[in-house]
Length: 282
Ligand code: CAA
Ligand code: NAD
Image (cartoon, rainbow, N blue to C red; front, side, top):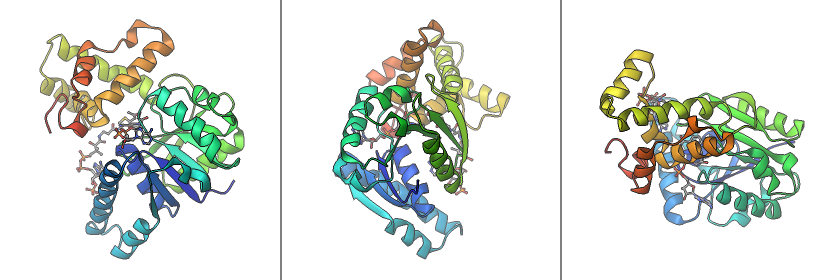
């Protein structure tokens, strides 16, 4: 399986980062979003990141231009028709993802691998929305993508070994480290991380300490680079809530109950850094 053409869905913080590292590794990248505004916002972040790389001496201006030259814009899913792999990074919502995958199954050639950057949703269920579950796989990058080393690779129940191997090889080409995990809600990363974040929100909700104090305890006491509330804002509170709901529903265990304060913030439209307000104001 030779991968040359990469089609990335969603130009948000994750899709933009994934597109950037793919283009930097030499792949031809089509970046797709729903509208011009979302695409441009994502593309500007990529351009800014590359400019910083030039300023820091990590790449030349010519290399930056070559990376940008590997991008094609897409506002129509039909453009996925030439893709060797699609990496979906739209919102963390099963209905949205299954409808995208069902469409992709019709649009893309039979050899195309369909990968999702989902944080927590079952890959097996996403695969079942297609007639090629053996080509569906989880490729879970961490935020911020250009900086973080890990990619969790998730095998659905039907994922082919050769699809796994192609994605593992691609991950290494992106200069990331693949770690293989099986398909259970939250996989490994968010099954462990998100209950900690949710507990930090409960700690705030119950008035145990201020948000700054909670973050300070975890930063200075546990050497975490960001406190859990700052990290929740960074990930996106909408995404955090979707992940907690997936864990709660998937395991049926009350220990995964999303904190009511998290729900309230999301309902208020306070989705964290990306909307200018979450636990902190940006
Ligand atoms: N995009 C690209 N590069 C970025 C960036 C971004 N959004 N944010 C920071 N960087 C780069 C900076 O440019 C800087 O590199 P240079 O100085 O060499 O140019 C480097 O990262 C360090 O940045 P800073 O000095 O500004 O700040 P920092 O030392 O505090 O590091 C951080 C920033 C790397 C984000 C660090 O705070 C950190 O590791 N935070 C925790 C991140 C984390 O836990 N991520 C996982 C989230 S969970 C997830 O992703 C899974 C999920 O499904 C929800
Ligand atoms: P985001 O809100 O920053 O970006 C989502 C983008 O997808 C937006 O630009 C939106 O316009 C676009 N979009 C929404 N529906 C679409 C559709 N039907 N077709 C095409 N584009 C569509 O979100 P994000 O933080 O980048 O998260 C994206 C995915 O990555 C989610 O599944 C999330 O769980 C996962 N993820 C997030 C993080 C994180 O830290 N934020 C980390 C790893 C994985």
